[in-house]
Length: 472
Image (cartoon, rainbow, N blue to C red; front, side, top):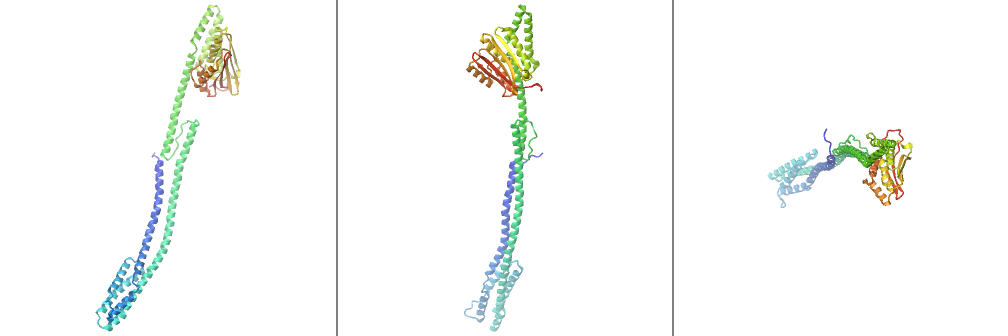
């Protein structure tokens, strides 16, 4: 496939076309003026030259010849020079004359001048006075009259031809200007159409590119066929945009895979953060119950521990139902109550309507553990942990509340800011909050409320799910 034209080359060709039109028009008009002016100047030259003919030619020649014939004291000799001047004028006009009548008249003038010169010479050779008088009257006077008449005829024909030519030139010039205007208009229309085509060929793909960019800005990252255009730059932009979108998709997919890996790593870290002492102390408690001959209590604790770790693993799933998460924290609290029965009471109050809702695994266990170790234990007296869930519109509100030591306003504000910034302060709070927002969006996550000496409440906001569709 041939390479498309660039915008610069197409604009250059268009500008060249306009330049040619605006250059041809004056050049064409100049040529017409030169041609017509040449014709007009030639005729005007003939008329001007013919007007140089001495209007007293006949009178001068006749008078000089009369003085010569009568041998007057005023005689200046034969008027040969005047006749030669007339012949020279006739020859010059003969070279520039095209009109038939004018050509015949000026030819007659030249022939008559030669005949006159011959008759003058004949008089010079004649000695008899009477013969001279006869030749003067019958030859010279007649020839000078004819020469002057024919010269006036020539001037009349050329003047008439000049007037005809002027009218003809005016008509021809009008027709030629009209034809030139029509031709220039046709060329101009062609160029204007080409200009509009160029504009459409540039603006239409650019508008399509703009819509494509708006679609991409709106989240449409599907790779499409590049924008088609006859313009090289726009085609490069279209192909580059689609390549960029393809690369962006690849990077997003790579980022998603990395994010998924990060989520799994964070979950693994969160699971690893479960205090190993919890397992050691639970096993010690089981051993103590066996040694105290309380096999039933030991068996229940082993069952609770097994259920706790089974829910922790959750068959490798990252997202589970609220019902499964509830069983997980129930096992955890039963084990901890067996260890801290003197200071720990708990209540789990879950609305059955919300148990099908999905949430990330190990969302509530870190919150319950915080309530125990940072709330109830520090109270050093009987404490109560309450876990409750209910529906609020299209969301589910889960609250883990304790009546332990609580926090100062400064510490509460510090935890809130750290949690918003994603800083790792407080056991699991930032991780749990990030996982909730990553899965459900920034409008979901954790909220903290606490009052020193009265306890702490952690609220969890997740979307409601009625169980009619598969969980996330």
